[in-house]
Length: 337
Image (cartoon, rainbow, N blue to C red; front, side, top):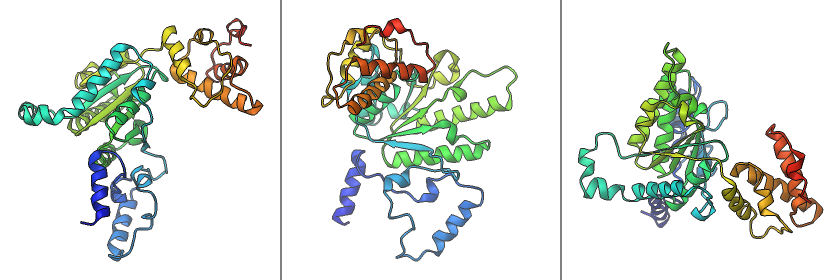
């Protein structure tokens, strides 16, 4: 084996580095006529001839596409550390426990014999539930970073097809590619598929039940960490919830947490002037929306070649409130000068 191939294999074993470049017909969801064409082209290609897309980045090849060019999943290289998270202590402790389960899976199942009595699977399946902007994605990114693995974010609505066989095929391709790359998976916005079923058991309910059931089956069998994210816990079906190893509820930040988020939101190189953190924390915003306000204000300050100040943040906050269709109360910004 050449030195280059050995190095590439070592990268994959560590869970980071170069992503394997599987055959494209195993990572793309294609139209009804496309698979046969793909096989014909593969057969006709000379042994020494490179595929037309082999010059591209393997990471681009690993990012699956439907025939309509919509990504089935997105690769995220983690850049978040535990210190970046502002979450309740109970959530942080649960995140630490998830890391423990992943790191010591082999010891517990293989060396200590629990694998012989485990008929379900070794997958660490996790539910993050909470409103948008409460830190679900950042927590997933932190877990992937601590494990030195990449994070694959999947929009489940793009994977699901009217055909159950096509849905099964899409999910299978995603899990296979992620398994080859030792990646952490995160399925976004699973509420429509994990919700409680109506009594009439419509075709939509049956399809949603199939999607949730098959997804959980693959998560349980996945040799690694797989996360599903939902917005509202009370609408989720308890039957599916019981099959998840961890369930973490992400609340909106309280005023103390908002203060901490505001203190951390500006990168060290960003010039700031006379920021009133306590006043900023009065705005009842999620952490994600606080970051939006800070970024918006940074652009305003850059345009004026000034440090970010309360005036920039006031205008930015008003713009974000308008975007979110939230009422603007002038009194809340009266001292932002």
